[in-house]
Length: 463
Image (cartoon, rainbow, N blue to C red; front, side, top):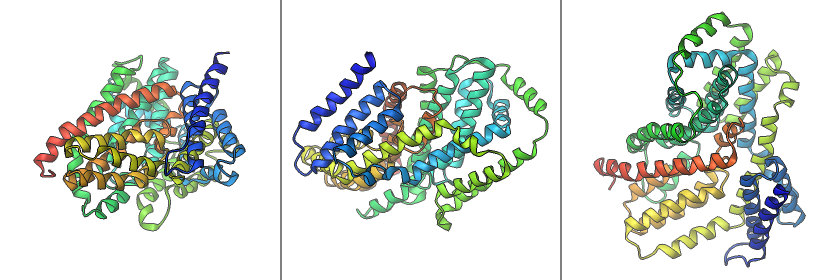
């Protein structure tokens, strides 16, 4: 009964939006799709049904009402990032099936296992080291960080009965990836696009200028955000004084690496190399992951039944592809362009400081309506940068701040970036907790990057 009432509430809110007249400049189908999107998000947050069911119902309504054609409704299922997310689950499963995941987890524990917060910082440090060289944050987190999270979580859940450890590690790794992506021009696939859009407004952003501006606020965020996750969503076991000794004993008991572990390790290294070289040789990160999966299947690391039984991957595939579709067509039908124009019309007359803060916050929190960082950047970065400069904001300050926010806002939801559905797919964290922690992290990040970052940018001459 309760679930029926919740579902009815979600449908009712969407129906109210559906009946309202669309704003000037928004396609009728865009407003109808917005109504469907609102209902879908309310239902996903309140969860009267599994997310996969809600997603199928959303696509059914979109096609039955002719808001989207069948081809449009299922276009997200061919999105390469969606498939990369799916393949990340298979990579993690390969680590588990071969035992290499446990070996890696125990190795991390043997170095950083004194307490659970140390494990969280270890994940963030791993991501930070890799970020400058792997431009796909989905590949970086899904292929490298996620298997460590999964293995560590299973070790603690099984041996120490601490299911909350998985939630803490998942949230820490996810929020850390948003920060590391903001720190380097080459840490996220959309960052070079941002640099190109800024160049169109006369602002030259280099790898060095990006890294210098991001260094101080980035490091502070990487210190602060995992600690916030630890305090608000703590694991049951906080101190692990015997973890290092236990890890050494487990590694000794495992003995030398077995043939399948070596194959797994070699394939893993090959994928990393392809992810790094991908932009230079014209290979998408998804293709590199496909090659890896092919090797898993041919070598016997995974069987086809293992692939079919990876239910988390296929469940994530359904709901993530659906949200990518809905959010993508909101942009196609002009809703995001209308929103940008609405911002322009409502902030003229402010001082550049006040106006730029408003522009930045609108840009940041509008990511709730996007399932792709690149789509958000493409729709709103250039218009809002033009507005900020017109208000009198120093051009380089405006370009870089919006560039950093283009990565930091990915931490808001469980669908707003490639790593989000991968780490959320572990099942350790509910949707409401994920969103709540994303909101808290946004407060911390915005405060650090705009206040302390602003002082740092003044020192280095950005304004």
